[in-house]
Amino acid sequence: MRNSPLHGLRVVEIGTMLAAPFATHILSQLGAEVIKVEPPAGDPTRSLVRGGPSGTFIAYSHGKKSACIDLSTPGGRAALHKLLAQSHALVHNLAPKAARKLGVGREECAALNPELVYCHIRGYAAGPQQDDLASNPVAEAATGVMEGNRINGRPSRLGPSYHDQFAGAYAVIGMLAALLQAKTGAADRHVEVGLYETGLHVAARDLVGVQLKTQLLGRAEREPHGEFAMPGYGAYLTADERWLYLLMLTDGHWLKFCQALDLPQAADPGLARLKDRKKAREQVEELVGRAIGALPFDAAVARLKAAGVGCTEVLPLERVLEAPQAQSPGKLREVAFRGLQFQVPEFPRHPDADDAPATLPPAALGQHTREVLEQAGLSAAECAALLDSGAVRAVDPAGFAWAPVRATS
Image (tube, rainbow, N blue to C red; front, side, top):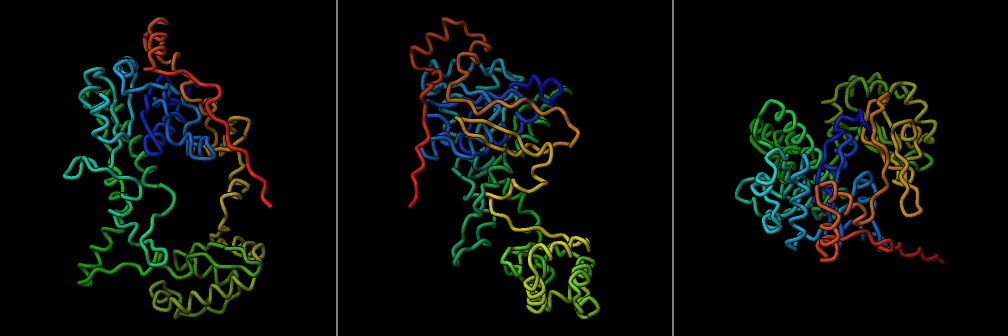
């Protein structure tokens, strides 16, 4: 759409799994033309679920074009160089050694196109570990997140790859800053984001907090578990066995909660202040759990919301998009793919915004190879020669078929 903020910007992605594809997904949702350059085997997320694409691919690669280019061949690298010379930005999350081997290092790309915004999302940014490999769980382990998240006593990853997605969002911020600086004549077009450095920044509050308590108390002290320090701020089971999550941040929240459920503790001066409730944590937790457990879910929510208490049901994934808030205009995008229909959450916009780009279904591997190369200046004969040599590949209509679902007995 022409009124999209990044309309006219061409971005090349050489990305696998999540960090770089998530960054270019955001750029695509802002109107950029994103060309996903993939090897002959495709992005690994194309073949993670029953021989076909996973939710990651469908959610974060719709709206992109796919060019299948074998960068291990001289012809493939030459084709990519032609494309980069006609593009505005490159985003990749190749390992540093792989980037150098494939000819997409910072210096090579700057020589091809001095105006190119070069964004590298890597395990570690500059420093003693800059050539080490890292993944989302490695970043969690190295920045304190995993140590505090234990399952049966064993440090464990969170589950969702939030550090990858944070890194992708940070990359977008850096690229937009570089584009703004370019308008002032600034020469630097390099954006580098490390998963480790992303993890440090996300954990800054906790890292500073432990320093603060060490200096004030003379010892390191952390919260005893992953929940918030405020008693009453958590998930509680209702009488009909549905989990209700309460927002209990302030003394005002506590007072409203007690009044909503007709609890005499509303007038108890010994629990009126947060610091006193922390000292009486077990008492408060038992009180809140008993009060919520005495009511069916709907009745509890009605009383709490009428009193202005923040709360929500703890929903399983299969029910999340049923919520009226999720189904309100502008929240979801209908995406069709291989005969299946998906509701994909949108990039958050102002409710009156009309700049969302049109939907393109997730591209088949190599679906746009010839189109992309011709737009980059290669002749039809040159494209044909590259296709014949195997340096680039066009779409295979029978590329995959999801394995049929087996009936369960």
